[in-house]
Length: 165
Image (tube, rainbow, N blue to C red):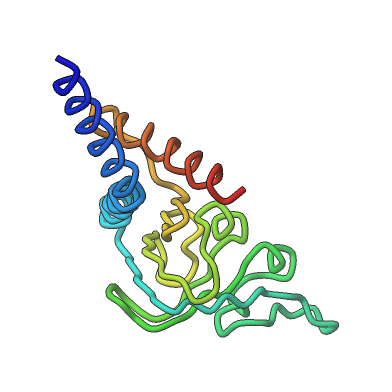
């Protein structure tokens, strides 16, 4: 009887260890799948690796400058945008303008990867921006599987934050 309890307990600990070990990979894969689904529904898509983020700024001559595409915005909205470029990894083009808030919410960092979709090939502020750190503009679905993975995603962030401290 005691050997049976120890065997069951050991098996449960082993399975729990495997789940905790693979949890970051499972949730990251789910996040990327949701981002791909969201960006694929828009007319213009872009995929970049080795992202370079250059903030737009207003010059003394009241012209928007900074990255390659910053001149597209007017000086009043210039400071809200950043030019993101990088190595093309699919989609159309190798750079686009994104709202700084979208970049922050998506967790995009210099050198990272992104998947984005929008209504314009240049200004993608009305679309979807996703990186390994999260997603801006993605809508969650109401399927039980999606709810479960959303819960795992929260749990994954909690576990990782708990281990880092």
